[in-house]
Image (cartoon, rainbow, N blue to C red; front, side, top):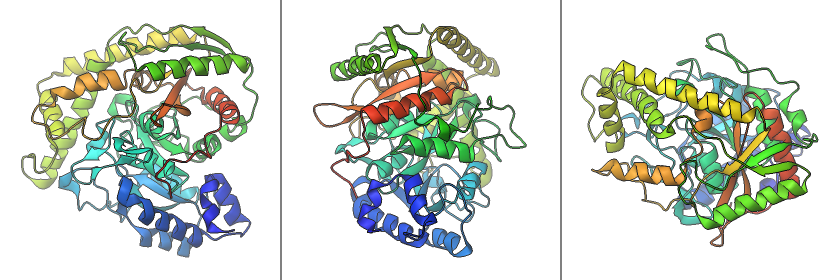
Length: 474
């Protein structure tokens, strides 16, 4: 194999080359490192490097997993023993993990060689990746724009073909938002499909989960087979799949009942090119034989304050844990102003306020369950404006009140599916006239990733995206 062909393969394809001895794991790692050095100065997607750690993995012998020998990036929010994890925060710039997270261990068991960490905003709090510690991660389609967040480094690295698949996580849209902004595939699994231990049983009150972004649908499905399932400490489990997710890719989805909306759930006007793209995809779906109708769920509560209360309380705990660890009050030298403001606001809330937010999330979830009783899939835009420009969201602003109105316009429809725990995916099916990706979001009933994988594979076949690289590409 000529390594110049690396970018034409997805992760499963690269692993097949290693398995058949057409290329070695060490050669793939060298190629990924060379690609990082070529494009990372422009996009700033990889912020922590531990190449030697990956080489030691290979020297010790890799497990015979579905991704054996494939280079991989872990998001800079998760732990890999003996490597630096900063959480995007200045106070943790030299933090070295003393243990490995459960999901990271499952990535290792799948045979992946983890050679670095991808950029995240501080604590994963924003839908753009511009932390003070490392600076902005830029969109490979246009360097003036954000690659999204919070898994912005992962999505930029996959889009630029540094790696074909990379770890990502999603507590309010953080897999789907960067997948949309960067033109890659990103599926948020059902709640509890993948483990979050050993340090926590759930994240952000059950809203958060971990998985990957990828260039192909099958990588996402094969990876979910490799890493899914509870651990001993899991507080609850997702419904077991009927068959391996990999077997859903290419399987006939049948005639699905698909509802769609080209509007914000708040009723706000969205970007006209995005609205037109949603209608175009609805037409494509009808042409594929699905029953398509324009209809949207009515939300029982405003998701914004719910996210504010739940995420704010978790942020306040993170700040408090840092204060206990370092034995002093945290200041703007340690954490960004936005992080400290969220923690301060949460400290002004009561336990009753937190429970009220949980109750509102449940009402949103219950309304969505009723809506999905009559449909199989809901289609809407992942983002309601094109990818943000670098600097539009400033976590170091002395007046962070500019942030909420932007979030409401930009990504109003993602967090509801974190509250309901339903699987949802962003599929790169459109680009605007300026050449920026416009992802389409599809959600299914709780536990039904299978339908999404079948539909995604059908769309990947009908409107392929893998061979459409961005201008900044390794």
